Length: 370
Image (cartoon, rainbow, N blue to C red; front, side):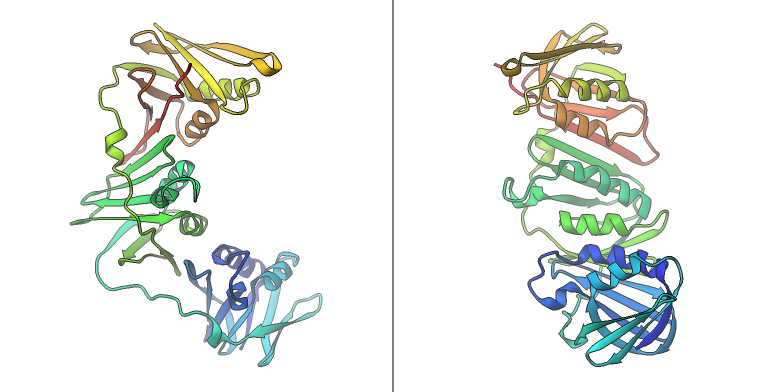
């Protein structure tokens, strides 16, 4: 195998592909990229057996071939080189050489036949979605993914719920819930699956702007095709909780407030809060919000009053400031509406303005105050 390529372009593409490689690979070949050269098309593959990526890039090919080579050594080399043409070629069946304007670098290689076979995209149903929308959905819902081993397995991923002309993307860790709905689909049935965090991260980092993404699936895996990329992720084999059961529909008390003002206030109060619970109380009265926190162990306390519009009964509720800040940080726009019922029921956070065909709903559980 022999080809010429841009060091910077190859480095960028390999950086994306490297996200599929586990830092604690169970087999040495899983620490490798698989390179397959046919003419001027270089196919790069990487996998950790649960998530995989296959991407195609244009190079100047001289000799077709296939080789498995250390991802870390190659990437570390390319990242230290300025933009320039490089040559990569196999010397013999055990070694490969990289040639730059600075010198030559020889590395050992593995048998490409030992590299695991990556699952092919299945025939059957698929759905098309805009890459920018999909990336927004993943970025927002990843905020509320539960920790593996702490929550049930399905809550350590994001639910993809395709429902005729819309898609719901949902995550929850039992303290928070994020639901992002996109209503611009063209799909004639329903389907749902749960994608784990590793697959979500790989997909998010690879997605371009404003490209069509084709989503395929079978009982075990989901497949994403776009712009020369294929990303495959195993699915979580566990039913996602019925999230609609916890979303309240009768919140009569509505707070309208600047998102940034509230977020910055919570950040300041978090400095003074007890670090075990990060508790901040919301004291609500007519067009009035007072935030307060304390940590008696260190004699800390802080209080702030924020301008707002509040229509509802006087209420005092407690929340984790850390969780509240994380939810507000994924909202676009200047204002949010926060809907309350009583101090023991979930609270909804909704942006006042949203993009066409997009709807974001956030839920946070209150902390029960003694």
